[in-house]
Image (cartoon, rainbow, N blue to C red; front, side, top):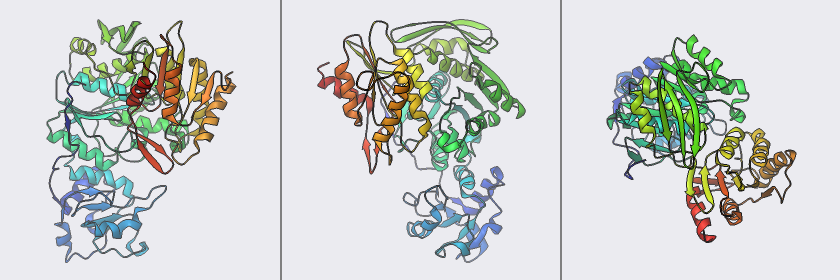
Length: 527
């Protein structure tokens, strides 16, 4: 993106709000999650109800380690931790009011502060956070993007296109931007941050002058209520393949979570090429939403025609609501034409002229860690985020160069869906000449076990260890090995980490920059 400005992530915020005003505003958007204030009071040291009602709240927090004095602290119950046990620590940190879902007499320690009870703290949190920020999504156009693959690229493309006509902000896996200014990144590997962070950033964007926000919206974000209080003007669906089944359980549940976006957005934009498009269109129409389609399929409102590629660029015909033109996009991978078409469709809905959008595609500066070319020659080294079997297959097909070898470095994350490990090995074997299987955030799982499962997939596809694939548990060593093996004209694809800035191992989290690691490996190899 143009400009290297870096601005603080947070600003001064909207200012304190009386608890009564905050609570009633939250109940207006989430009546099922927020009971009346008087009935929520379980115990309290406030002199009177009126005194509690007027207590000024300085923030809404779900992390006791980061709350500010005067905050309303919401104790969530998760798979590993129950924050009700942390209420005393929140009180010592300066919280003014505590919120939980247990009766006061069920708490291990009697609260030393006013304590309010809600049916489900996870469901209540987004409405309280939105109310504190004065419901920013009701005063700004929010465009959500969801799908298994392509979310981040489509989000960056859409943000770039909207900047042609408005001050647009971006909240994405790969970065956060207000106009052309990059904000400090959030910590962690979450596509969708916690509800408090989502609402605080929407407020930050609004106060910063943005009229539009592109919000990358994950299935976790919907199923864990992080996005419950967001009003969507537009929702873009890119595609669906099996992913995150460790969380959702079944593909049907995963698909249903994704479809939340098209049910809630005023206009649903659906990839007609995807096999699940009929489901998403039906879900949107059943909710009374306007639908727009894109893709190469006949009948798409934004339709991709003849496509050709050259080094570093795609050229394709695009018919936008009956208007035909030629688009040029400085990216590799035919699938990026679909990402561009989805972004164009959303920007047209927002009132930008098709001809202006197609012209602007030619100047798109790219996405960090998405088909990012680190070196073009003598051997080409590319960093990409592909971390599912379908995404890896697409990425390998996109970068293959006739007459030269393709080497891939890839792994699979620990504590995530183990069912995708063998398919990753299979696609690496089928799509590359040599695969180096390595770590990718093993977390508490054994890296050796994960690599063995990936290797089994490669073996089942005819691969031979030591010939077609190798196992290298250290990612830095794996990158060095791949670069050293590359000959002029070969392509090295470093897949799975992309833009991420940490590498998680058991007991430690390392700072990480895949592109920088690739440059260091190239320098060490004398490239």
